[in-house]
Structures are given as structure tokens and as C-alpha cells.
Amino acid sequence: VSVRALYLDGGELCYRSDHEEPRPGPDEALIRVSVAGICATDLELARGYKGGFQGVPGHEFVGVVERAPDPAWQGRRVTASINVGCGRCARCLATGPEHCGDRAVIGILGRDGAFAEYVAAPLANLVAVPDALTDERAVFTEPLAAALRITEQLEAPPGRAAVIGPGRLGMLVGKVLSLAGTEVTMIGRSAASLALARAWGLAAASGQDAPRRGFDVVVDAAGNPAGFRLALDLVRPLGTVVVKSTFAGACDVDMSTIVVNEIRVIGSRCGPFAPALLLLARGQVDVDGLMGAEYRLEQGVAAFAHAARPGARKILLRP
Amino acid sequence: VSVRALYLDGGELCYRSDHEEPRPGPDEALIRVSVAGICATDLELARGYKGGFQGVPGHEFVGVVERAPDPAWQGRRVTASINVGCGRCARCLATGPEHCGDRAVIGILGRDGAFAEYVAAPLANLVAVPDALTDERAVFTEPLAAALRITEQLEAPPGRAAVIGPGRLGMLVGKVLSLAGTEVTMIGRSAASLALARAWGLAAASGQDAPRRGFDVVVDAAGNPAGFRLALDLVRPLGTVVVKSTFAGACDVDMSTIVVNEIRVIGSRCGPFAPALLLLARGQVDVDGLMGAEYRLEQGVAAFAHAARPGARKILLRP
Image (cartoon, rainbow over all chains, first blue to last red):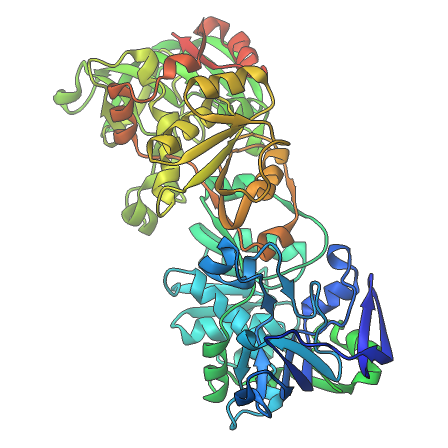
């Protein structure tokens, strides 16, 4: 059986009307995709990041279970966490599949993703979407979970935090920290993005106006090397820089700043789905303001181009 | 009154027979320097690091108190911690002088150091040297304290650690981690330095032979950008890289490695003197193996050249 899908091959994105239907493994479900979101990692993959992913991209999605070995999942509306580990190694057993050396990652590494009519996912990764939550909001579960990862990694909510890059992920990070009791300043260049930050009740400033060494925690969600360098300028001595950006290529870092000020730098990737869904279902993160535009799968290449524009909000794909 | 001293001016080191004697402030002691050690930071300062320090370098020293406002210190053999804060700001009050925005640092920043007949230091910075400890061993207090800073910063002793750069500081770091119950591998290039590591009971390997992603903690004490890049290769996912190197210039870093593996990078600078002196007094860190050569102050320029040679051990200066 063939399905419609976007396909990526070494940085080349195309639409296919005859991609092979995913074949779920023994403990996996086949999910009919309702809607999927394009994120910065997809754009990096399409630029050939990490030598390029070959397959169907897409890891933020909501869908309906079409087939599953456990009938309890049949017909349910779900989203899914994206890391699929071996389940047997020390890392899987200790901290989960996120850092398994043999892992696949849905739509990112070694496994087809959700920019298609169907996607397969292990039952262990499925999370039911509450009825009250629309598909368009629930598709923010994965990026909101990634934002919540920061609060997992910090011992306690910081007093003052800055978030560099008020984009799709950056806004979610700012909101999550604010909900945890932190005084958040969003740092950006465009008036539109800073206006959205203020509409969400967050302080906003340009990089030049933000106080040097003035923040306990600075989150770099800028997606470029300048963001990390600014983060090192804004964080206080003994403070923490959380890096959320994944971008291809190297970053010139003045290591002596890190040493002399004893700064802590933490890489941050995937986070917990349950609290993300809870916050979305309660309406505590108003993601409607992050909605950009919707495209059909057939217009996927144009959708990617739109998502890559500066200031673009969340671009959704509908099979 | 004039004293003999080494003097640094914008990366130019010279010997002066007529430097002005230090004038201790109201809560400070005047110390006659017995012996002082040259460390990598001195070499960086002499290369013009951070725009260059103007004054007398030297921050590892042992001496005898010549004058002090508190007579209890008179005639005592001492060493001293090196950060001098304002004592009033939030950082001084919360975590001490190390990160005061107005701090001076003895021999490094805004304050003359110990490569001279006399040095001044606040009484609050003085630490008495136990009688049983020789000057030549006690001069390692400051670098050993810097090594112990790592155990202050880590929540718990790591299971397996690698230390890149088996030089003067790297060896102390390896020994301190080993004493804390960690399985330590020293990573270096020269056969001589790896032999010393083995003589200290530590495992030793070349960078190529060390297991990728095999260490909970990797300490970068290499003093060059290649050391940090190797550290990112050797640390396991969710592991910690501690940066002890201060070197002038930027380092090209692949930030996506930090993000995807959720690595934590911690800058590490000055540490606690009391446990350092205790370990030295007990003979638990056999610093005799790190001794290089001794020079008179007049031969200071030659001493710096010696200390900068690859594989050089601790070079001491005697006024």
C-alpha cells in the first residue's frame, strides 16, 4: 500500500504520492495523521544537518490510532514521544530511550515521521489527547514538552531568566518558566515577536538593552551562534545557560568567560509529555498566538519555505 | 622603599630591582615571600591574555607575615586565597569574593602578586601553613584548591572520569577525583606525563585510545581548544564536562553535540584552601613528583620560558 508523504534525502525535500506505508513493529501502532507541525529541527534536517536524514520528516503530530496490537488504543486520538530506544541497554533502563546509543527518533533519525498520511509509533510512546483539546493545540505537545525539559534540568525555578529568540520554541520556554514563578525577559530583534511576548505577559527587550550579567538563567533558543554568545554576556557569574538551539555548524566560544565566571552550560532536548498536555488542556499556555498557517501535504515544500521565514509562527501540515 | 619584583606590562615581562613596596590596606598583612609557583594563568597573562595585566604577577605563594594589624598573624607562615571582593555586594555576601564585580585578584587583576620580595593580602584571605608542611609543598595549596573546586561543583563523585591534560593542574585534578572514589583516566600525549599518571596510581591513555562517550565526567585541563573538543567526544550523554583551561582566544564548538547529548559544561576556577592544606599536610597528594625547577627572581624571565615548555613541571621562584 502506498501513502502520500514528504520525503527528505540528504537535504532535498520532495512530495511523494506513492511512499511505502509504514509497517508497525509488533508493539507498535499505525496512526492516521490528523495534523503535524514543522519545527526548527525539520528545517535544519532539510538543510542537511548531521549529514542529512533520509526518510519522512515530522515529529510533532496528532492522529488517530488505526491499528494497534492492544485494542484499548484502537480509534483513540494520540500524540507520541519521539525517541525509540533498544529498551535493554543501561541508558534505556536508567533514564529512558532519549540517550540510547541505538535509538531511532521519529522523523529525525532512522525512522519515518509524521509528514505523511500514516506514521508508526511504539505503544510505549503513545499519549492520549484529552477530548477538550483540539488537534491544532495538541500538536504543540512535543515542543511544549521540550520547553518543560528545562524545568526538569534546573534544580529550582530561577529568580530571573532571559530567553533569547522569541520564536515558536522560545515563547513556550518563556511561558513555562513564567508559570514556574520566574521573572522572564524575552530577548529578540523584531518588534512583532517582542509584542507577542508582552501580550503573553512577559517582559521583552532587545539584546543591546538587556542587562549584562543580569540573569540567573539564560535560555538560548535563537538558532544561531550569536545567540549563544549573547547568552554568555547576559548570564550572571555562577549562572546557567540552557542551550535549546540545534543548528548545523560550529560556534566560536570564548571559553575563558565560562571558566572565570564559572558558568554552567546545559544542553537540553526532549521533555515530558504528560505535563505538557496538562498545561495545554487547562489553557495555561495559549498557543493560538503561535499559530502560523496550514498547508496540505502536497504543498509541503512551500510550507517548509514559509516556516523558514524570519518571524514565522507554527506552520501545520494536513495530510 | 623599593623591592625586587617581576613586572608585567601588556604581555611584556621584566625584572625590576626597584619596584615600589606593596602598601597593605588597613585590614591587610605584608608578607615576605618565601617561594612562589608559576602556573598556566601566569603564562597566559604574559601572552597578553584578557588585554594584559599590568603589575606584579604571581598568585601561588608561601611567605611569612612581616606586618599585620592583628598581632596574632605576626611572624606566621601563611599562604592566601587570591580573590579580594568589595565585601558589601550581593555576590560577596552570598558566595564570597570570587565573583564580586569589583574584585581584585592577587597577581591577576588590579593587584600586585607574589613574584616579588613582598606581597600584601587581606587578613581574611590568610591561611596558616602547618609546621610539618614544607614551603615547596605548601605552594601547591592554591592549585590543589582549584582542583578541589570540581568536587564542590559536582553533586557527587562521578563513577568514571577522564582528565585531559596531565600537566600540573590536571594531575592534581586526577588525584583529587581519585581520592573522592572516582575511577580516573588521565588523557595525554607525552609518554612522560602518562608515566607520572601511572606512578600516581591513575589509569592513563592517549586521546585516540580513550572510549568515546565513556566517561561520566571529563575535565578539560589541556589549555587549548582541542582539549575541549575531545572532552565533548569522551563524555557520555547526560554527563558533565568541567572546563579548567583558561586560554586566550576562541574555541570552535559543535553546539549540537551539547544539545543532542544534553551535556552539561561547567566552568571551574578557584577552590577551598582548607581541605587543600589538609591533603598536603597528610601527604595524600604527593606533589614532589610535580616539582620542576627553582629560579631566583632575577631569572624570572627564564623561569617563565621554562614553565612554558611542553611537559614542564611546577617552576618555583625564590626572591
